[in-house]
Length: 461
Image 1 (tube, rainbow, N blue to C red):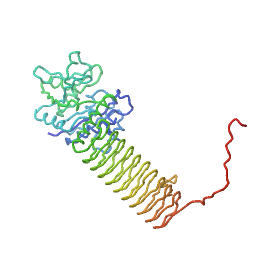
Image 2: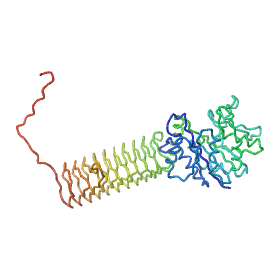
Image 3: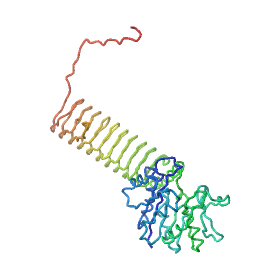
Image 4: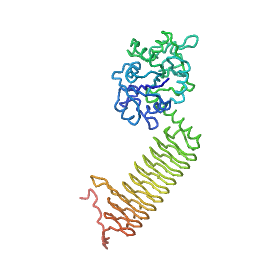
């Protein structure tokens, strides 16, 4: 039988005390909701429907590259109502539906696969994902009979003092046969302290009508941790960070201090690479083998080759760095920068939308924007490509084996030919032919016998 998924992402998350929809709060550089969807895509569902409400347009914009459908919950009347809002998207669907909360970032795809398999084998109409938790406060409790059968779920706000002592919790995930789901949702009422339609009440409806309810216990209760406030957000990030760093270290990566190293789960890093403390590697970054990165480096959505060194306090976004290049310390590589094999970008250098050729060097204190630099080029200290005229950006072309003197201003658009040299302190506004020396300076004037007048002290007038 087919499997589809509903992800509940309509709530604001009042306890987050934020204008940002709760499911968009970042964890290791990615929105919380994206982790849930990663696990969902791994089970290959027939369709995915995300129920949105508060901040719906922001959520849709964030997920614009992902193939999902949306349902709108215009009024926040509880989780049961949220699922009911998705009914139209399943008009022609007959199969099982997995229901997950969007603030469920630690769930593994392997757990979802086991959950679904258990549900199918049991030949039942509703299953729920449960866990035993030493601190169950805030979660709905699982009520079972003497035989261990699930009877119902009671929300903490409605639980008695005895029921609050139960440590088996409802994760908020369900697998339900679609026909029964829509039937049960039609029977929900809002006679509770919150005046809402509780999705967990479908369990009681099932047992009262003689249907068997399955319970799949997650061995690792960490997986079902939800996020309701900033403290829980930090706890979940710590869990994901530990999980990611352990996986990388077991694959041959050295992380000097995992407790202060932050790497997105989607990052790949080759064996024998060393990551020093206080480093952040986010997004879809790929790092090769034998690299040395950090300390205090930020890399996002970039590609790093083999045996690359990225030194202290460098900041890199959407860049490509090829094998054996050296970056930093204190370097900034902006989007669409490409540093080819063996090139060096030194301290206090900024590169933007530029290609730096093989073996070329931009050692220190330079800005290179909208530029193609050839091979074996040396850019002197303080050199700048002046790429912006106040209206448009223009490109600079520096061919192979060029020597750019310190403090040279290259005013684009301009081309410096192969093997050419510019004199230090020059402002170059015209193309330089191959092999030529370009110097632009005023004649130095020396006045002998000149004596600077002492400044008059205040109060001597």
